[in-house]
Length: 210
Image (tube, rainbow, N blue to C red; front, side):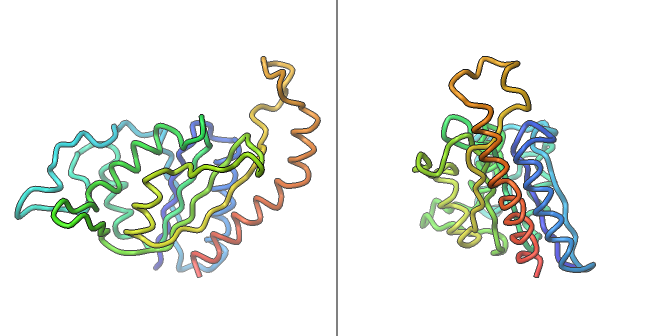
């Protein structure tokens, strides 16, 4: 039985990131009955980022899994044994959400050795990064997962990336102070690209499961 863990780092349960990750899950499940897919919403959990307790670095007790006992602990244990990992986040102020950043600290700091600065996870696995953003392809010129992407690449493997650009933030723009956006242009873009984005997520899930 293969196990794929999906981490939803977005706060809204029915918006762009959640919908792409749902399609990713559907793609993974379509690969066969021997695939278990579990989605975890970070905003449903009570946890903090790394607190530099150094428990993962104790001599004779070093661990590549965070030792803080909170709601994130069982999630990190599951990831360590998984066969695939998908990380999804909307992009706020050019970066992943604070919840995703805190999660990535807890995931990756135990991988880091302060003896030789190597990064070693319990096992390597395929990774997909799913990003949803208000920006357009022309304005997307930054690494939204930051240093954490380097940690993921080194410890787990080169990730595949799925980006949904120019997403709609709300259903009705007239209800909000969003005058710099054209609702018509937003929905036109969505009509032209959203189904393709969903299909990319589905295919990525299927390929990971296979």
